[in-house]
Image (cartoon, rainbow, N blue to C red; front, top):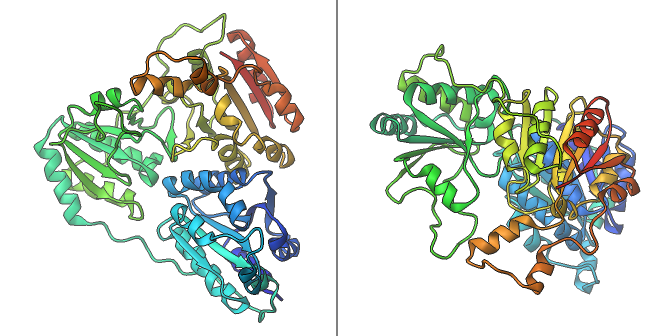
Length: 517
């Protein structure tokens, strides 16, 4: 038995049984160990951003970590953008980064780098394994750190620690600390503030507080005490659809966000942080609430958010029988026809969404209407890239489909964002996943056109246009998908899109629709 075997055994003993990987020479002994562990599902990504993004999607849907396998510092660096999204989502993840043998590092071979320095900004915990004898305690520590509270961890595996002889072990379950008890003082302070601001209090829910059971409690508080219910701009995971409480998503544009929060005197945070503008804009505020708004934390990430909401309801005297405002039938609206538009796609997907589906939304500006319409769709889970780093949509869908093989996954994807990790389509095909990808093909970075206006630039010239548009040549998503083993077709009318979506949803398997808008 070598160190790599021990690492695998510790992971498997703790139900870490999926490894998203893009290995290299330094990891070959770990790859060989994986070959001896048939209970470990190994998923190859052709780019490390697919690997880390898929691990993020898997973690969000299972609430437990997958492992990733990355090749030295440069391989880790390729995966950092989606590690950033995972960090912002508080996703549990165990990154295993191979490195040179310890005695080889002083030679400064070409792939030598500061792995700790690269990993630290995107990880809550980083550790280098000291040798074969350190593999078991280090791996157990990585697992514990990934879940208490949930977050991204990075374990550096020197090659000689992997291939070195290790004593046989019989690893067991790692004991995890229970979440801290509800802070009754915080509950009472929040309840007092809500009572003092009738109709002018708001609550932001995220994490476990955005699951259906916790949302019901939040919705009861909202209805009984006239508290406005919000979600963050970028949503890690929320359970939505008919019969569920539907928080209002804080808008991305600063002016719209400040308008939505202008009348809030008390803002209660449940699992999240105070909302702020994504960027600094000339003449616009960074904080989205008024400076005199009282911002209170009911419970933070790592605490029992469900129990905190229950305690707040009790403190406010909200009865368990109190009805919550829930979404019901779609508003009356004519079925769009003719040329395909962003809103037509959003409405069609919302109306046709299968029950218990998973929606991974990286359509950026193009699908903004979908979130509002999804409140009336069949019950489903909804996810976004939470760190603002684009290229997360296709990998998120990949990981979610592996986590939940019995559920249809819908990926709403912007054409520019999708090109960052288009290789993920190949992984979906190889793993025979049940994913429908809808590419909003407007052939431009539409959000950046808006950002130019936001910073005060109202007219752009040829140089700027060439950096913001994706034409000349236009991307051919049908050919790209087919080249990676994914069946695909193009739609430029509402009728054609509806027909393709019906066909894709009527069966299991991969399909990509390039929606020309």
